[in-house]
Length: 428
Image (cartoon, rainbow, N blue to C red; front, side, top):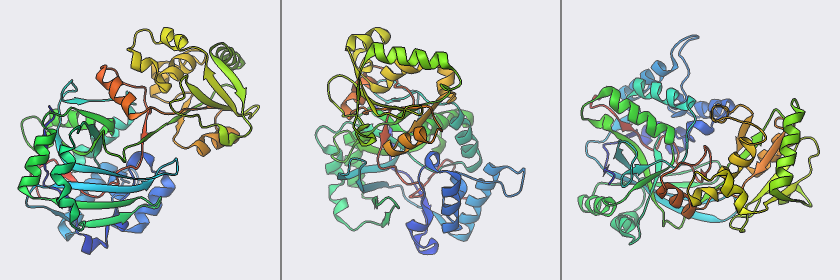
């Protein structure tokens, strides 16, 4: 079983910094340079300044600059450390990409870092190598978890939710609304009885990392570097039950490049699509996003040459079963696995290394963005995916295999800056 504990959080003094709106930011991996500049301009204490650090001078060390900045914020009182451990409940009311309003509720805690394994912690996706080194260097410098991983757990009897229900009837400690309209409400739960009940509810639970694989693997490397026991053996984690009514997952679409320069690959792709899929033309690009749970896998397809919106429907599941014969049955029905096997590694010839380093491949979490990137010529073609269901994710994880990178997109993201997890007993 996973070891879930309350944490002695490092957090902003909201009176001094002017509230959460001024200091929180989206996760680092969805922030572009323009957005970083806008966030940094919002406040001298905005978390983006340390989560996506810049060197204090040209040629300097951005990670050292981040560590110095955290030290400055602690010295001036912008960051304060709690004296007692607590759990932190986070309720996020949001509008999903499908237009429906939901509320997802989870708990911020610290989880002991350990090797992946059944009954403890499992990943659900393969990861790209680059971000791990960046996050490791930042962790070494700051000795702090700046943003949480996102993990799922079973709560079939509703015991975890019930353990905190009374505490959530109180007014939240803080509230913040993201630019996309997501309302984040945060509670500090220090009541010993509530913490004990929550811990008991999660005691038998296995955790599945839904988002933040790079951060978890970074935490594992860092813990081993330091060695021994201590706060560095834990990682800041946002825990959400599979059964939570606000839990939803959306797709990450596949974009391909290099076709215009290689007619042979273009012809091979066309031949494979005709061989494996039924092809029908759609009336408009608005129809490109495919339905989920429609039986046979359906994809939306558009290329930069003809720009005709097409629906691709897998002719026979047996085609995917043969291509993925080495994998368990749930994996052979996964949209990203089928596209990787039949398209990316097939006629396009992308290797595991190509996919890991994004050579000839790109991603988009937005239907409109994927279409525009093809229409503008930035990419040669787009495959719009239906996305995996929560049940499908659980089944594949239970089978002991990892999905291809970027197989899922959980909405909403947990803002960075709500609180931090110190990895050292030092107060400086």
